[in-house]
Image (cartoon, rainbow, N blue to C red; front, side, top):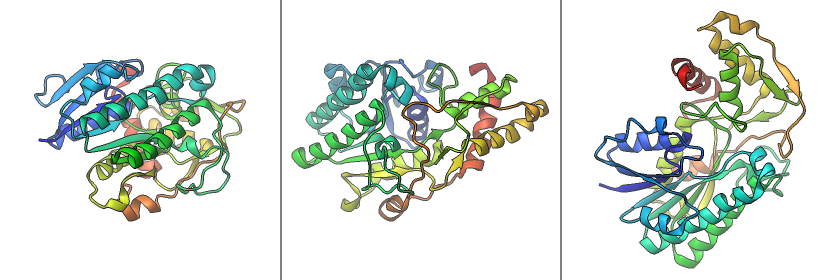
Amino acid sequence: MKTILITGGAGFIGSNLTEYFLNKGYFVRCLDNFSTGYHHNIISFLDQAHYELIEGDIRDLETCRKAVIGVDYVLHQAALGSVPRSVNDPITSNEVNVSGFLNLLVAARDAGVKRFVYAASSSTYGDSESLPKVEDVIGKPLSPYAVTKYVNELYADVFAKTYGMELIGLRYFNVFGRRQNTRGAYAAVIPLFTKLLIQHESPTINGTGENSRDFTYIDNVIQMNELALLTQDPRAVNTVYNTAVGDRTNLNELVTYIKEFLSTYDPQIASLEIKYGPNRVGDIPHSLASVEKAKQLLGYQPTHAIREGLQEAVRWYWEHKELL
């Protein structure tokens, strides 16, 4: 039985990965400090024999060393996400996303971990205006968060070349789906809008609503993590991949879809108005990924486009309204 360490395992993406790999027969160890993760995301795993929870912080090297003991693979999801959060508090974002990442790299190196797959970010493309985004064409970062995620890629490249480690970065593009947090100042747009509409409140779109993103359903992300973990192709290792669908949706279209799907449960939602506010600092206007590299080297085939993913996500939020 192979052992996987999932950092940030009580968070949105981490808990979905945990559920998937437990069902596939792996032993899963979760490391989380519950700063952005939640116990309700992992409560169903706690009594499983092949699951272990370590409550700790990746900013502590000894905690990282403890977490990687006997580990075959690392799926590193722990981070402080959100561009606005990093703008408001760049120091903490750097401590978690850079120093914490380095701690885990060192611990994994010393423990002989076979492969280290980490959550990179589409924010790395920065001010590059080219569309679609191709992995080896990036611009200058537009936020402290983007800087931290780019530094992760630089460290991964150095550790691969210097210490012979196997590392793969997955540049996530606007991931959404079940268990994504709806609360707090830094809730992502899809869970936030869904929550507000369920509560018969009007969401506010930043800007004109024409900004677009490559919204990526959680099942596509799980597939990419598994492919990165298991590939035996030497060309596919020690690089980065866009983790996306390869299609883009603007915010006006997005909120229209959410209203459409929610209206099947509550017809009053269809008539709720949408408000508009100023653009957010550090936001890019458009994001669209090329996923050709992942298709060619990993065999990636996304299973959910935006409408299929949203329909499943909206149903999950409706059925779990107590978590809103």
